[in-house]
Image (cartoon, rainbow, N blue to C red):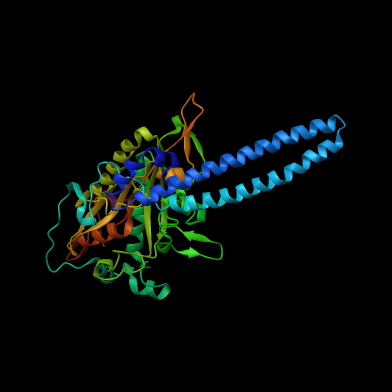
Length: 423
């Protein structure tokens, strides 16, 4: 959420930059500024009336102390009308602040200058490509057929137990899944990230803090009895650890890593591109989250991109890094890099990670701040996160790209984790 001061000071900049996200902000920004003006005037009136009440109270006390009871009672009667005015001003202020917040949460984060205009993912910019696309022979199988052939993932059983999008991993498939999780966590810790194991159900405040609510409630599984939400990513609980927290500048950057199951409704998803592991309602993911000094958040972003690239390279997967255009970048992000790996049997690129800098957009909602040494004023931190990595499509590419007539080869980096070299 953009701050009111920033909106007032940088109105034209915000309107111009949000055009890159295909968002016409002028009308809503004008409404926000008008409401903020009303809020300020109403607050000023309320404060002035309260000051008047305080002054009268002192006068009443003085009259009582002088034994002038009748005079004191007469002055006291005057306060009733003023108190009623204060009450009305307070009610009006509450309505204005509610309406103002409802508008503020509909304004996207402004994109970084590197974000180019575009209507969809076709406008994304490729910044790097690596690895070698394997040349498969003998009618290569897509991962869902490999899963059935070697009995390592059972999609039909998952459908029986829950529904589509909830697969059951079996035997070496389950062990490979666990190996990937442990490998990603270990590599993250080697890179200086501290592991946390957060809840996978969060409250409404947490969903609001990272921008999932009220923007993406339709994508989240909701537990209405308790008004809780199943997390769509570990970003939500891990970032919210720092909600309403004031850090010292020398504590930054804070680097966390977490494994969690993730849950997404993915309403309306259908077709060949969501088959098998391509899109699930429940999936495993390792997430990295960084709380950074505003002057160093883009250094942190590059560090996170480098970390994800090393993971994919170590798994011997062909990949490309895309900088998202305005039409594909998220509501909350200022700059995002997507990682895609090539799935050889499907002959298509699969997104496996998004690494984003949200600057102060999330931290303003979270009220996550820091204080420089020797200074009294608190400032908003910058928040960043990224998948390191999401498992389903990584697993899909590993199965497809490493298949051979007798089975599936396990990448060397994972053998010590799986305990086997092939499936």
